[in-house]
Length: 369
Ligand code: G6P
Image (cartoon, rainbow, N blue to C red):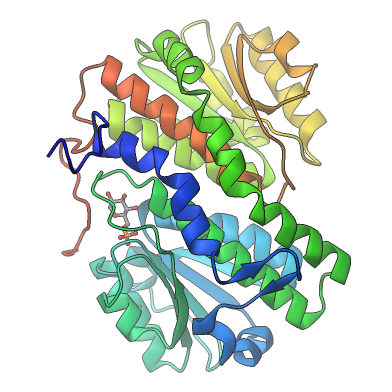
């Protein structure tokens, strides 16, 4: 057991720390930043079908669904194809409209989630093309899919998904940029820049992991909370959802993720000196707006923890604590921004004496509905 954990106390921590390598393994042989090219063998034959699809429907559960939500933002922005994101368990029962030629993207670590399998089988019968973004090679979803990409994250043992999620994001980003380039909905310069920024991700993740002690110290200040709120806007909204999911899975602290502006329509009623609010507030077009959301929390005595970029001099003056991480293009930022949230959950879970690798009532793969 100790050998399998490679010297780490838990599989979850080991898997968090593996991410520079697993993301690199996902990009390797596919992304060539020097030439500005992306080649994914599993999608090359379907480039025209994907590019001409009238719409894309992404189907997943849990953390994989959050990867899908980020992909929606990225694909619509770069490829200009309409995207919908569905929970597999809802999609399979609600008689959804699927047209021939629709592209269905199934995202699944295990490739065995029962609801996702049934959902895509039904869509396939209706003439949709199935793309699988799967980690486990040869799994059911990979066999049902006509096109797709493996995430190459290696076996994930921790029940709460970490490295599989960043692998999904890396694969989905490459596919989105490739399709956008093929459809000419982004310029050559933008494509080249995105390829380059993606290639820097493993090294930047490494730098975030070096902040482990600092993140552990922030975790110490949160361990006795009974409720928490995670807020983000744009590409960081799904990261707020994922941060909240991770925390509730690992520490059993009640956590809610919300789009930062939407908090005025409900969650703000919960804010007082006992409610920590974790903002995902790295630099993007929403930056000023999220800072004013932070001020609104502070004005109500809420405690603000913010994930920000290095060099941000304004946010540290407002927040009670900040975690400053390397900057990248705002489209790519989610893959970096989730890392401090994974570590935060891990350390809070440990501080509360929880079994972080095997939280109560959860299963690694939900193979029955
Ligand atoms: C379970 C796991 C999650 C996972 C979800 C979807 O709930 O605990 O970590 O995100 O299933 O699983 P999949 O294998 O389809 O990604």
